[in-house]
Length: 209
Picture 1 (tube, one colour):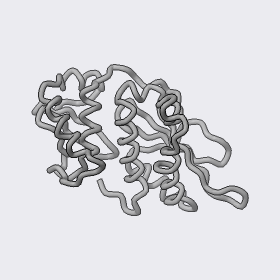
Picture 2: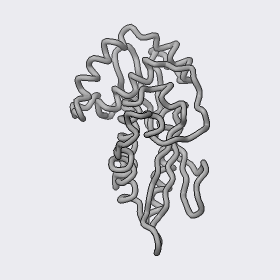
Picture 3: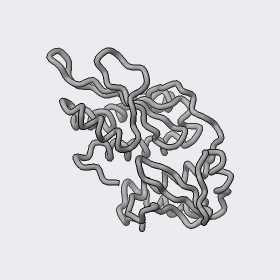
Picture 4: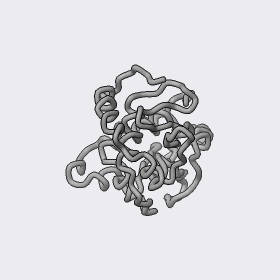
């Protein structure tokens, strides 16, 4: 059942996207994205440990729990694009993905990385436990003393979290990196929404799915 919570106007966006979804070739998109189709013709999209089902009627969770319009909108965008591209295996910053328009923005640091630092400094064990609960695993290149974790934001869209805990000389710091081909699967604005949802989930004291 859909949540009535409106986050940043996403309810209206979701309603508009529903109209596009009615004529979408969901089966082809699912094939391109390596997603399973259930007996009802719904594409099964894993998103942080939960399966979402996308059909011509809209989006629902397999467990029928509530969720935000922001998540629904991001998943519809992902299905509508239905890219048959594959991840590049090279990680870059959000600013590098966005290009000149985002070059001087502090969004990645203020809205994404700072909450991770605040939540997990001196709590590396909690970070690793929560990460593992949604399929995050150690991987990727990072400097000495860092914890580096790889997550699948969505199938074929890996992201890397590099976290340095504070010590006697330096404060804690976090860096989020994105596969270079991420915007082949969803537009940049949608990617920013999806990763914001990810950070909110990751930094809750008791994450709910």
